[in-house]
Length: 258
Image 1 (spheres, rainbow, N blue to C red):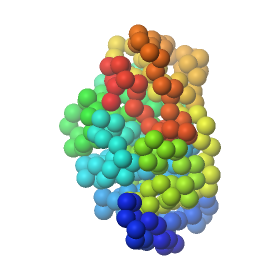
Image 2: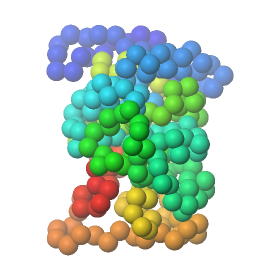
Image 3: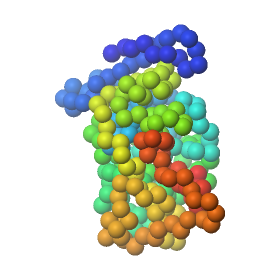
């Protein structure tokens, strides 16, 4: 349905689309509309298994720039990329270690983000990635239905930077307004713990953020190191629903910091 939302920083209201995707039997037209919006370089808000995300075609630089602008953030914090299936891993990343592949096979779809070396031939611009890409397969049926149609999406938490991540579509609308073309309403999402982030770009797998999947669970599959904190003041706690949601930017000071 069409709803009136405020245009950011202006007084007038414009219309955008809000679609209910709680029932798979009836979400076809909603997914179609979201696919069309993505193909036009527009932004879509979608439910995930953690928080609501704001997504753009990962291969349209202007769309990714619009995503960052909608959130009020710069290129130094590039968004992670959500993928529809395990096969996409090799299309987006290069030199994927066997251990990282084993973790993906075990914990995808779910709360695991893997930082890999990006395929150098890909025509995309996610920001200042330093040649890496953070990949995750969400465990949400509507999100995966969309991803199967669109392919990889650059997705960040659906909130203005510094504000709480949206746990329902109404909150996302309130924060992002007309910067988003289509909102997919999947009801209230769990929130809580953000994804665990594993850096697979070095000689050993390292956990750079502990979250939904414990270090012990990872180590039941493959050897994984815990990132040692850098000397100096204690870092800020990992972002959750009270901050930047499920964004997968590793903590500053790591080789894969983005």
